[in-house]
Length: 170
Ligand code: S3P
Image 1 (cartoon, rainbow, N blue to C red):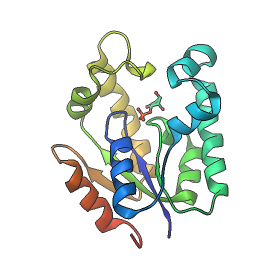
Image 2 (cartoon, rainbow, N blue to C red):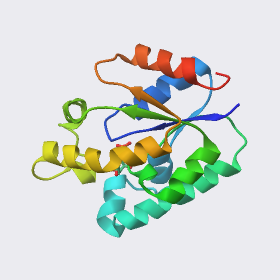
Image 3 (tube, rainbow, N blue to C red):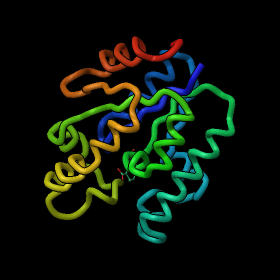
């Protein structure tokens, strides 16, 4: 059995899909953002503010390395920027089967417009930021993915069905 890994832009539904999939497949779930916050005993916003984005990116890489040590078969949802590093994409492939939850800029904006916990989306023109970042990142997500799931306009049950149908030995 392999880990099921969920990647995608902020607000694409990785955390919620991860929790529901964990329940459905009866496998434990882990979220790299939550793991980093737990180890650092502070929020992502505090980490970005105190130590900057590159420190956080290094923590993401070490988190993946640590997950590779475990034999447990899990659902793993990862932060939206984690697949941008080539090294991380390599580690993700080693770690399991990678599902890209692909959402449009409009879907993402609707989901995150009231959110204050994502430092990269704060400030002016979040809609423009989302469109630009998504255009820059889409190629990395596609390169990291074994399977792409279009999540636009789909309810969670439908998304779970699609993942389950394509997951190895689910
Ligand atoms: C980030 C996504 C966030 C979190 C951090 C940076 C990004 O995770 O890791 O705020 O660069 O896309 P989610 O995708 O779970 O929101």
